[in-house]
Image (cartoon, rainbow, N blue to C red; front, side, top):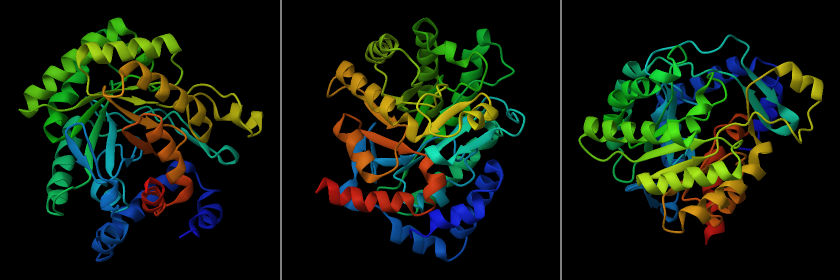
Length: 355
């Protein structure tokens, strides 16, 4: 199974990253539609020892796939066949949008990192909702303890910040009935002005409105989380923690991509040539763990769920986050470098580490 890194170097390394992503994802979905799909599901199913109860839900494993890989809910079942305990779809916006001009995805192989300025390219909430519903129905047939489906929502680029709440509510009403949990993304650096919504004065009414609309649309409580940036100051992180406690928020996802470029080993000229965008991957590890520990200290041991993401590559990384106070852990960038058996390998080694 470790042949994939060599395959990546030979086949994908020289290919446009967005094209490589599309081809790789198409192959995963194709495999799931063949008789190999059920076989893969059985072989890669996480050990029962890894089950976690969080957000009122049963997760087959604490390790899941972060938002960004499946932006439109087109391959949820196929991805759960890979062993992920949950798949977070999105980011989905109220209106369909093409995203930013290409090229908009760049690899920093030496740093095991990626820079993206995708710009929330997706088909819009109305198109994504029935796909998620179909995936939920398919996973329900697999029996109890099915993988969990989260949905990450963001602001449509063309919508003014003053109208952001109404825009988020379009996505909320469409998607909440299908979501096991819902994430409000206010931390992507690729939608102009979006990060201003992390200010507590803007975040409080947004989260309040989305939470109320989600529960009303779904006819049940839909666990609500907010995703924050690694570029927040420590004081800002503290403010988010206080707001989460004050609103009774179900959780915080920490962290999104960073606009920082410090500490990279890639040739600086190559980094500059990539241009603006969010950096993800191994360079985020240190700050992501710092924010995780700070959040857990402020939220309390029995406080809201923390989903830790950023620089997660191995089972030891997952265990480090769990030991530091995370309830769940997500990865994404290393999936591009490690290939389709990555989640299953992490689950096997994590089960041994936890014993």
